[in-house]
Each structure stands twice: as C-alpha cells, then as structure tokens.
Image 1 (cartoon, rainbow, N blue to C red):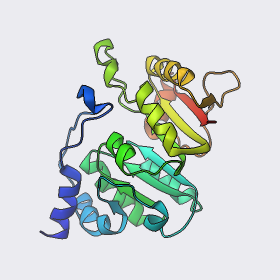
Image 2 (cartoon, rainbow, N blue to C red):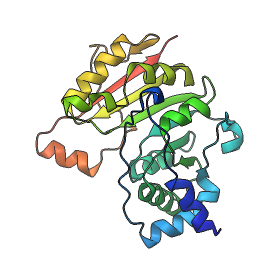
Image 3 (tube, helix red, strand yellow):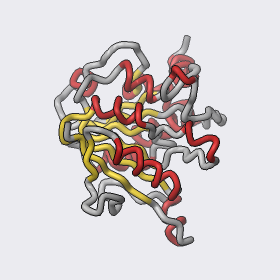
Length: 244
C-alpha cells in the first residue's frame, strides 16, 4: 500500500456510531467529495507527520506533540482554514483537530504544511469515539465546536452533537478550569446548546449574563461569517468552564 493509499484509507474508514452509540444515532452525514491533487498530495506527504490514526486506547499527548503545552481540540474543523490560522497565531498551544470528511482533512494538511506549522495534529474519525477511547481524563484545556450541523428540523434534533451525555463525557476530558467553546449561526441551536449546558453538572457559564459571549479574539472571523454579518445574520458564541 502506498503512502497515499494509506492516508486515504485512514480517512475513508466507516466512522463509528456517534453520540451515544447505543441509540445508533450519528451527528454527521458523510458527503465525500473528490479530492483535489493538492489534497491527495498533502494526505500522502503530511499524514505521517501530522495525522493520527484512530486506536482504541488512550494516547499520550505529550508524546504526540513531543512537549508539554496547553492543548486545544476542535471537533469538525471543516476545511481547516480557521484551525490552521489559530495554530499559527498561538505556537505556544498544541492543537488537535477532528474531521470526518476526507477533502477537509487534506485541505487542512495542505494549509498547515504551507504555513510550516508544527503544533497541529489531525484525525479523521468520529469525534465521539475519539473522546471515549483515546483521550485521557483532564488532558484538554479547551474544546472547540464551531458551526456544527444544526440539524434544523425538529425530528432531527436528536442528531445534534450537543446532548447531555456527550457534554458530560467531554467534561471529564477537560482540565479543571478548561473551557468548552461553541459557536453557531442557528439561533435555535444556540438556544438548545444553552439549555443543555445550563443543566449540565460541573460547568459554569463564562457569560456574566448567563447566556452568550462576544466572539473571542482567538476565534477567526470566517468569510462565511463575514457574509452573514453583512446580511444581518446572527452568530452565537457560548463558553462554559469546567469547575468540577
């Protein structure tokens, strides 16, 4: 198997059942597009450097990054543009990104290589299973979930990744004082996130108004978001801190 075949195999394996596998519900749908030549090349060349294969055992992030540093994990980084921008802007932090769509992983690796970034690792697997199997307790300083699929139809709300059982599992991976930062451009999902998080044990809302936060400087303003602002669309950021 060539390096390219191996990299593509890593990213095209059937993902595990998501949130709550007992219910056989996924929070995502695979919509694989064709890889560009650049994405194929990045997967072949950069996966051995920045890619992490899924394994059903806890990994040592100090060994993965070859240092001790604060750790930020992003769930569903899309094409990876903002994740690469954040990693480049904060070399003192280590970033781990999880994405199930192969072209996005390839695009992220390509951008990271072009930017000569060394503090980023990526995975191509169901985030829920990664949290369950690979992450040590209290190993993360921040978890980011930016613009996840809103599953806007009422009958699909059960597919939303922000659910009580998921945020409870996520809490155990955050250090005390660590943050779970969410952002969405769907008001109904923002309200759902707020309701779930306000009821979740062990978290405190970082908003003094007990609702939403201004966009922190570290979260890049995407072109999609800029266009939304021009059209009058809202964006809601929520940050909850683990206190127990």
